[in-house]
Length: 358
Image 1 (cartoon, rainbow, N blue to C red):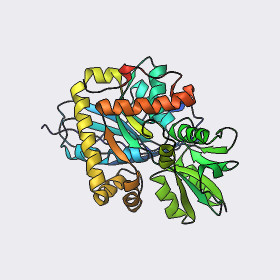
Image 2: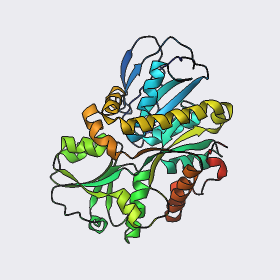
Image 3: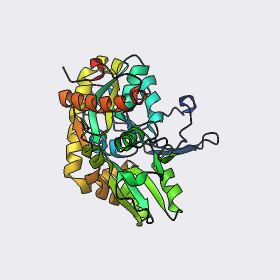
């Protein structure tokens, strides 16, 4: 296998949810030495850090501009990124990481990234809004959402959430629609029976809750572990994956998937197929080698290694492809569509949304 030229870019940004895509900073980095650059914008309040590395060897199949979200979706990629750095893949990789899916989504459409992890419902929305320019490759993360309480809020069941304020991030994505569906199954409306205090990132959730005497919080792993490391009195009280399953809902609770632009797939089918094989191997290795994987998680500025080591077993990292991925995603999106059609872009995506390798 030909050795490859590897460029690794990790872009980490904190933006408020209302920032429009046109305000995004386009970031490029290249070079043969490590480069670290911090950029802050007074207008958006964003912060970004760039780390660039490269090897000397050209790849055989080309380059994938890969995008991930800070959290479990990027954790699943760290072995693949490490393999690319070592030159053991047949293609080059550039990596761009964001904290918010609504920042990553336009990057996929406009070509800043070729392949990206996104909430599955957001992939469906992009498919509908772009006339089919986005294709689902892989279901990469199953349910990772939890309800936590600080202080004695006496939360023992979903019904106990009625009347509570829930601090969370993920408005317009899997967290909002999954919680909304679960609440509706218990006779509640997310817009009426609870008060959602939406933040733009998990870091903002933690900052808001840290000085509260009591709070109800919704977070995904690995940020549950991060939060409990900082605030030992923050207790996990509900596993929303178990609550979802208890309803008897058809289909798995899928937190995120991997998506590709259709034009990139059409022009690079062999490259995409090899990427999927490598991603599957990456996830398998991470789940089987948690301690080693946690070091790679820290190297990629996702979370610290000790926290990652505790969180990875609860991150539900998977790589589901082909017909199984198609069925699971169809069932999940149908559940969301029945509850709120706008959650999937107003219509269920057609067959061409799913890449089954055929």
